[in-house]
Image (cartoon, rainbow, N blue to C red; front, side, top):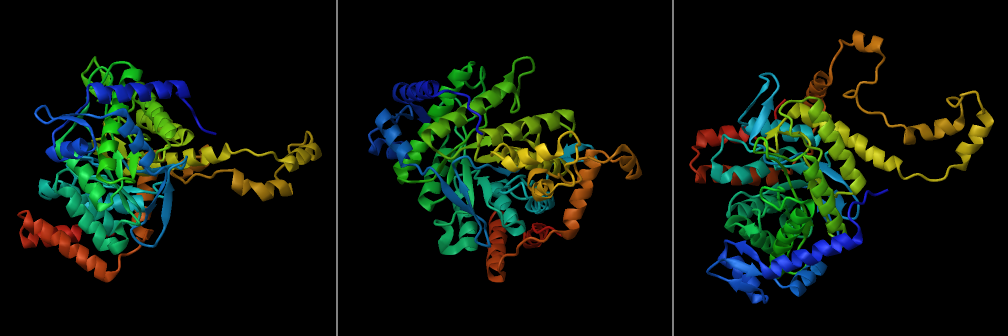
Length: 490
C-alpha cells in the first residue's frame, strides 16, 4: 500500500511550470565556477547578475541521467542498502546546535562527548538504519564543525551516514576521512550522502553550489534539500511553493549532471510552515507536511530516490506534542515510501537533539515500519478454516494456526512502550516513558558493542583528525583530549 497525494496531471503541471520558471526567471548562483559549467551546456548565463536560465530540454535530459536507485554501504562489514523504489530508512535529524539536557530540563551547547554518546546510542537502535552527523560540537574550531562531526560518527558507528559540509573546503576534508575508511572502494561503495541546500527563493550560494561540484567530482552522492516556507520564502499556496521547490531542486540536479552524467542525486526537502502570528517557522505544520508528501509524489514521478524531514517535532520538551508530531510523520513517511527519513531525536525546528527522545522516536519508527509490513495482506484460506472450526468459542490460542503465525503477525514493542497491567506497572515503580527511555539508554551504554575499525585505518583516521585540529589552532594537549572524547566511553 502506498499513499498518493497528487495525481499525474497535477504533477505534470508542476513540472511544466517549474521548467518555465527556470527558463524565464532562472536561478541566482553566487559561484562563477557553477555559472561557467551551466554556460558550457547551453544555459543562458548573465554573469553580471549571476543568473542562469536553464532550458527545459537540458533539465529533462538531466532527470533521465540520474540513477533511479543506488546502494549505500556500511563503513565496515560490507552491508549495503538499496535506496529508491519505496524502501524507507530512518536516521536521526542532523546538525543540531543544542542538546536537550534532561537533568537540567534545559538546552545547552553540545560538546564532542555529547555527539559521541548520541552516535553510539543510535548505532544500537535497529530502526535507525542510517546515522547522521546529528550534533554540531561547539568545542572545536567552527572551520571544522562539519568534518569533526563525520569523524566522530566514523569512530562510533559502522552505519551509512547522512551528512553535509558547512564550508567550501569541507567536502574535501570529509572525503579524505571517507577514503581513509573505504580506500579505493569509496566511489563504488559510498558510505555517506551529502546534503546541499538552496536558499529560497531560487538562489544557490557559493558554498552550496561548490559543494555540489566537489561532491560530484569526488563521486559522493548528493541530497538536494529545498526549504520553501509558504507566504514567507515561497508563494503562499501549496502549488506555488511546490513549483519553487521543484525548480530549486532541478537547478541543483542540472548542475550536478553537467559536472558528471550519472551522478547520484536524491530528491529531498525541508519545507516549513510560517506562523504569521509569531513570525516563527514550523517543520511539523500541516502545510509543511502537505508540501513534503506532495514533493515526494514529484520525486516518484521522476523515478528518483527521495528524502524528507519527518518523524521530527517542533516541541521544546518531550511531551504529547512531540509524540504526536513524530508519530504522524513516521507513519506518513512509511505509507508514502519516503526513502531516507531524517528527524528522530530532533526538537524545536531542527535545532535541538535529545538522547531520550531519540530512543522513544526509534520505537515509533519501528512501529511505523511494522505497520506498513502488516498492510501487505494476502489471502489466508487456512484462517477461514480455523474460524469455521472455532465458531463462537474464542479459542484461537490453542490452535496450530495461531502458533504458526503469531510471531510473524503480532508486533511486540520494547519496554519503552507500556503494555503492562496497572498492577504490574505499579509494582515496577509507575515509570513514565522518559524514565523507561533513560533505562534503555543505560542498557545500551552497558551492553552495546560497535563494530571496530581496523587498527591501521583507525590510526590513520585519528592522525588525520589530530592534524586537522592543530591546523586550525588547537594545541596538541587539547587535541589529544578531544580525540579521546570522540570515542564513546562507558
